[in-house]
Structure formats: structure tokens, C-alpha cells
Length: 206
Image 1: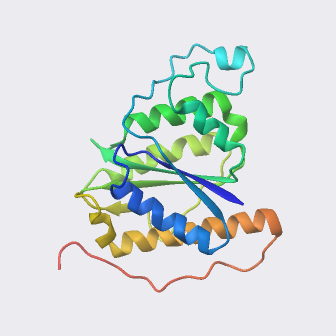
Image 2: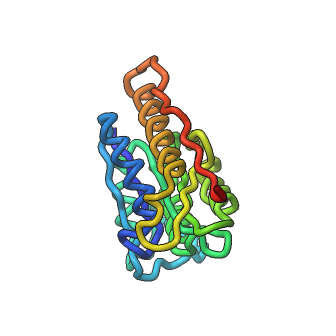
Image 3: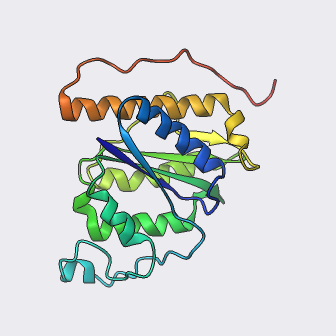
């Protein structure tokens, strides 16, 4: 079993990576292989609705000058997907939206029925709107959405600051444990419920 994680931040080791790494480490402990793909800072073109991917039966985007088709190729070996993004103006990073839209439109058969989860990282607000935006494509592609003890949100501004959000990181671990449990149910019929950590609430004002 393998989970593909997409880091939708242009910052390779920023707070989105901190959140995804927490989830990846938890999945690895559960015996699930992981791979984190960094979208980087190079442009990712948006879908222009040319329809050539479908007309030619390509199973990938007709444009091959950015990261999109490299990620599409990785979907063949992935059993689940986690997409993480920083929050920009209450929305996910535009590059990761362009990537997801082109991937799902041109290669939607590669994600059908695979569990998925969204992760959003913000300084203060807008994360729930961005989180909802990332989840909507999963629901259109028949992908079981993996939940956690809270919305999959981690807080932090400066690089690495998300590591201080104890509740956010616990939310990542709970989500990852739920995903590992679901994958095992799908692949092996494992009957046991995932083990839960005691809740670690963290309020902003103390």
C-alpha cells in the first residue's frame, strides 16, 4: 500500500511540508509506503478546456511542459492521495488547484475510489474555506474522504512554526491513522478500529 502526498507549497521545507511529513511518518509506522511530491516554484498551467486528453484517449494532459503528467504517472502506483496547501487569500495555492484540476480531468480513472484527504496550513484564518475547496474534487471523483478528529488544518506562519501546533500535528496523525486503517480494510479486511490518542487541545489565547 502506498500513499502519494502532494505538497502544494512553493516552499520545500515550509509549514505545509511539516504537516504532510507528520502524516507521512505516521503512515510509515502503520506499514504504508509514502512519497511526498513537491510542486516547487515553477509555473503550472491551468486547464484550457481543450478536451484533447479525452479526444485522443491520452490518460494524461496534452500539455507536457510542467509537473502535471509526472504526478499523473505516480498515481498508478498510489492507493491513496493526500493534498496539502498553504492558504492564500482564503484559498489553496493556485498552482496546486491547477495541478489537481488537470490531473483529475485528464486522468480521473487513476483516482477513482482511492481514499483522499486534504490538508491546509494557514497563519490565522481562511483554512476552512481552502479545506472545503480541496475536498470538493475528491467527492466528484468517487474518492472516500478521510476525516480526522478535526478539520485537517495546521497553523503556522514562519518556516517550521507549524511544528509548535500540537493539536494540528495530532490531527495529522489521526487522519493518517484513519487512512491506514481504511487502506487495510480495503486491502486485507483488517477489522480493528484505529487506535486513538488522548485529545490534546491547544487554544490560541491562554
